[in-house]
Structures are given as structure tokens and as C-alpha cells.
Image 1 (cartoon, rainbow, N blue to C red):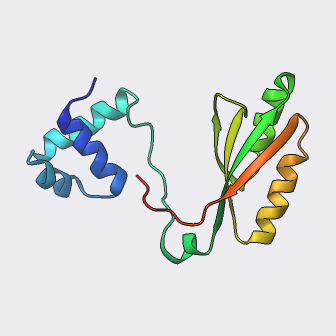
Image 2 (cartoon, rainbow, N blue to C red):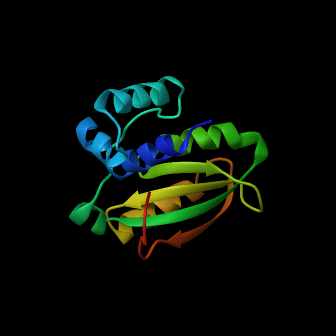
Length: 142
């Protein structure tokens, strides 16, 4: 699939997607054109599908995050997924195996707002039950 140099390149881009091609080339001991070609190839092949903003510092420190396990009535899965996608507080949604069907990553400005969002999720049509865990600390993120 992809080689060790591409894996290193991806790691550097995950740390900072705005890093310059020149800095990437120096870190990888490659020429600028080689790095540009590798990035273009990774984008064209779908390995890199886009770039996003990673929130940090004081903003994320003020946020409350929770992982919400969701059990869904099977016939209403599509409707529930769509409703969760429409909730701005739900930043990620995973389909999982096991007792629960989904894991939603929820971000809120306060515990009160989180409580409201959790109530909203629990009241969605098709949601049979939820189990929430509030994130106390993020040890690392890649």
C-alpha cells in the first residue's frame, strides 16, 4: 500500500497539516518536488481525503466532551444516524459491534449544555438507550 516514507509524511501532516513543503522535505530528507508528488499521489489515491481544523488551547480546555454509547432500534438506524449527523454538538459518529450500535463523540460548552444534548440524543426516535462517559482529560491525540 504505502511505504515507510509515506507513513512518516502522513504522521507529520497529522501533527500539522499546514507545515510547509520545504519543512516536510527537510524532515524527510527528500526534495520538495518529491514531497509534493507524494502528497499529490496520496490525495489522488484517497489516502488523504482532506484537511481540517484542529481546535486547541484555551478553546478546547473550556469544552466538555463525552462518549455516548447508543442502542438503536434496527429499523430506525438510518433515521437516527441522520438525526445525529444534524446535531452540531456531535463531532463524530461510529458504528460499532457489541451491545451498543453507535458511539457518538459529543462536544459542548458546559455541563449544562452537555446534559441538554444527551437528553436530545436520548429522545431521538429509534434510540432505545444510551450510556455516557464524560472525558476528564485527553492524554494524546493524533
